[in-house]
Image (cartoon, rainbow, N blue to C red; front, top):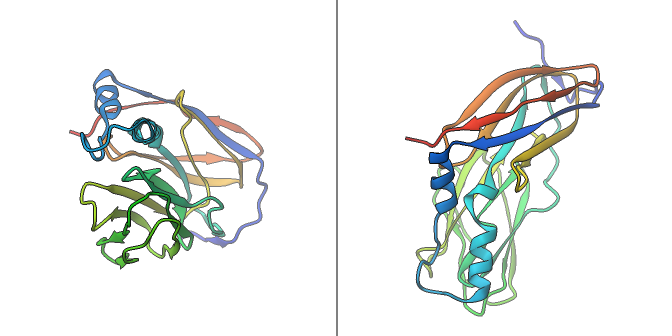
Length: 217
């Protein structure tokens, strides 16, 4: 039977880094992305938000400890705005227990709701300038919508680990200050095949993991 250390205080100077590459087919899929509000709003602001929300920008790397239980703290920046009839960003990752703030920066009334099992909520219709905080108590994917504008959508990836990051625009990533131990490294993007693998880091090493991801069939 494995022994687990709760809130372990081992050496925490390990680093996992690398670069995520994509096959030609997956590049085509993720660069095409999901065009929210397609054809309904061609403003410069909408185009800017669509570029920021490109799925290629929303690939997340997470490290899940296998031999200790990490202490979870709220993710510092957890804000989703509504602007130009668009959620921005349309995907964020947070630790379980984080309060996500929804900010209406649009000239329209907006709503945010989730029908995800064990994470259902509906914040009601709210005017310009309204800020509402919703605590996320479920681990996993939480799908969001707006009941006023049906084609608005976003996703919250709620994690049971504080060790995660979003890849940079060039595909590189780095997760630092990792305690010694075994981890499952996971890579998530809804258009790509899920990837997971066990790794071990200790003694202040820099562990490099480069990958080429395939599209979901």
